[in-house]
Image (cartoon, rainbow, N blue to C red; front, top):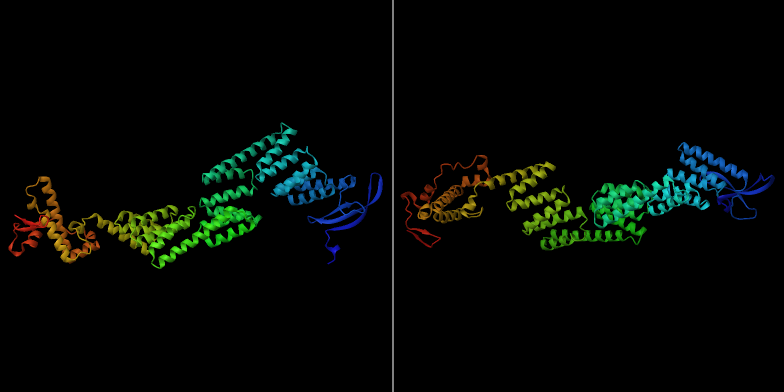
Length: 527
């Protein structure tokens, strides 16, 4: 293709009749905005210049303007734009043409282009009030409230009673106030306040990317990730190189524990804006968090629980704002803590995980297990009920029933505690324990005590007998341990006589004599 063929302009010669004379004019013909325009050129020159003084050109320009007005009224703003552009091409020094095209561009939400046309209009005619008003409204839409206010003040200098300018000044002032409040809110980490302020500001500054980005960032910090991503994605559709929007997209992914994808967005944001401090910090935190968590997981798998506990603790200090990842880290540390028998700390870690993520089933299960191990059965039942309501699986139902049974068992007499033995005690250990406790609480030993003491010791003596009666019998003990006795409404101890057990244990077939029995507490015989 020749150089001439690639030129956007084609030279033509035509005859013009104006000022009472006929003369030839050289033109450049071009395709601009998908329409053909004819621009006069000074003979022998190299740059296109407009002969606005030519009546024919002015007449044609006015015709294009009228056609543009007709399309504007019909709300066909794209066609209106084309005809206003033709008018400008014919008479580029007419301020009203730029003002009209600015109005059309505003209707098309092309505020930056509208701002340029408005500024050109007032450059051509500094008294053009509509131009100043439109420039101010473009500044408002783009979030430049101070610049907008200056434009409206210019209108008021020209026409002090202009009600529209007076109203727009108030709007500009309100936007500045919302910006100020948002800045204070962000510093105080009151992100809800920032979102509120930005929503109010965006009512008048709908095209301000800066306000949208700040709102999206705060939505992400509030955990409202879908809303934040929607705002950032809308901006990226209009400007794929917007570093702030890329940063917010990465931030959402980072806080949703998609760290690898988040890093990609942070890197892309830094590529577009190498001095983007927030993206740089987030990228560094994301990489550090991932590395430390993986180190902790590796140590846990290798059975190095102390090291895993420390690594998870270090990871939790990296970024307090990363709720989902920190919830997992707390739960992981709780798992390690339970392995190390740090059950109270494990319960606290699970609670912290649940505070960060109330839907975190694994944390409820881990805490319930720790409650079971510390015999806090009511708390365990509450957690298992929460889990079962959320996920009605057979496994969760079994865990809930087991906790409910242990809770019932915990509310009956604990015969193991009565005798002072472990649940794993042997038959011989149970007998020794009974012998010691029975002698300690036998009523005859406390015959000289007050009536209150006698009643208390008699009660304890009976409990010791009950405990021995159950735990020394293999079948009864099995039913007691399994909780079967609860389902069968107890062991039927209503008519139980502890003295019979005592006599059988100490006296044998020939009867029982309390005298001469060795008292282990005094290391002597009871007389």
